[in-house]
Image (tube, rainbow, N blue to C red; front, side, top):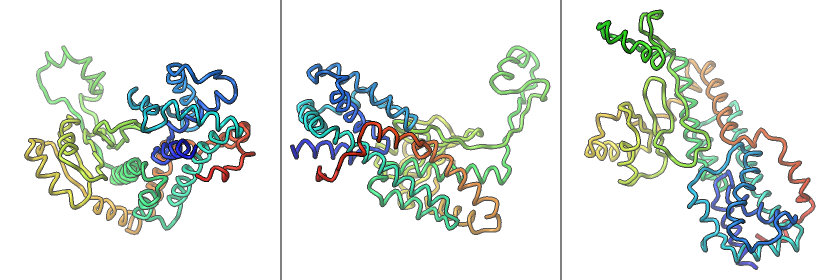
Length: 349
């Protein structure tokens, strides 16, 4: 039994904060224990239906469902995760102990979010330090796999606050003087570009940055983008040649901004130049430069304006990324299923 329990523990330990795979196992165990699933013999039914059970839970608590490939999701039942024979053993143990393994999964789930809640509280601290904030994720095992999102959030909050405070604008105008082509494609200019006779075929808009996706399953090559055409890639992990080549291949913009570790700046520049992408890279910024801009924003002449704006954006984005932090329904769910009455210490995990 110890081996099977350790397999469950391992799935939990390596899970991102969204907990898709552990929750899928927990819901199979719950459905079987409650009689809603009469047998574990129909493996195909379990494989298909358990995804729906999992999604119902995750949509309710974190406003998200797993969007990974079918192959990745089905890997849950591989020999290196929770194969069906192990699931059978876990299910019987769970039934004998009134749902204790379900409770264990959800207890670990909320504890991981409690760690995140503590990190969120750091962002509400008047003595906010961005490096300390990032370290609270990189040094905490329960949050380490969410570090990429935190880097995106702190860079988004800084960039958007700065372009707003600097009152950056970008201009789009139609300069072709050929009236015939303007007449022929006037609807395109109006509907796609917002240019028409009423604005003299030009528009001036405030510049803004946007995050490319919330709780996205995989890196699509863009972390932030701006309405000026700039795209930002945040690379906080060590980069190999395969990742470096994907930087240029995955993004068609010619205004790419890369943010990386300082010791990799020259390598990135050299490799991308050799691959022919150098003319599409606007700049390569190091995290040290980002941290210095944060220091100026929080201690400089305009800190009274910038620091509350940046912190508000960090808090807003964390809650968008991890909505369970603003959801009061989990405790009721935990109590209604009877998990509060179980002693998890008996598992010795």
